[in-house]
Image 1 (tube, rainbow, N blue to C red):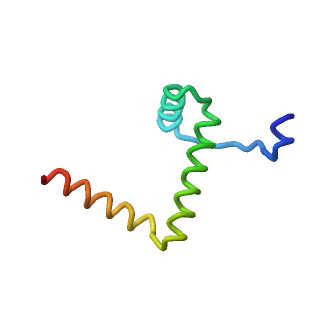
Image 2 (cartoon, rainbow, N blue to C red; image 1 turned 180 degrees about the vertical axis):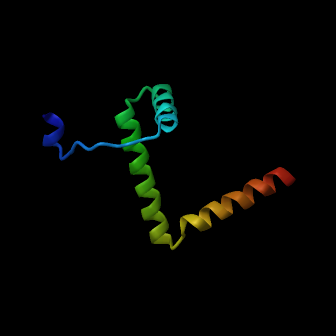
Length: 76
């Protein structure tokens, strides 16, 4: 009931078993509940999208730049 007072809503999230297992493992390593881990991941994704929107950078551009820089690191 306290969660509802803070504006939280219940919803069902259907995850493939392997994805849920990995998320639970990573959450456990960080001493977080699965719920808090997912909440944090969503908040980080939204923050990154908002920043990209402000800067005019698309996620496709970021992925391309990451691939290029990773390739350059392997060459050096």
